[in-house]
Image 1 (cartoon, rainbow, N blue to C red):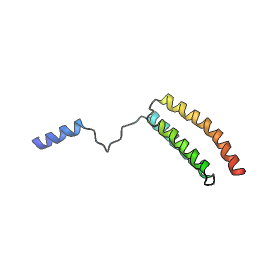
Image 2 (image 1 turned 180 degrees about the vertical axis):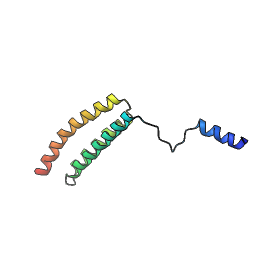
Image 3 (image 1 turned 30 degrees about the vertical axis):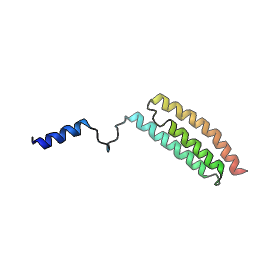
Image 4 (image 1 turned 45 degrees about the vertical axis):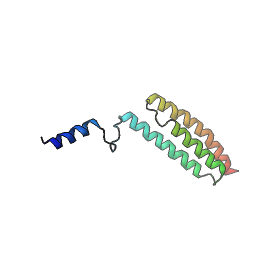
Length: 102
């Protein structure tokens, strides 16, 4: 092998590419899809509120919670966060429904 190719091969083996994302397992993939679906559900519900400070406040709260837990990788913890988030969202949804109706 030529010296330049050998050098290039050794560099690429030692330094991970910034373009490649880490490989995740099936369980993590499924949980990620559930989290993304939950986020979309929240955004759809918030978009049903007329444009107001309350709408922005709720959206910012939800976004901050998702951002705060962005780096969680433990599946049990992710499941816990999803279940508590959904329970909290149901409370928020009742509030949203009251805002729309009233």
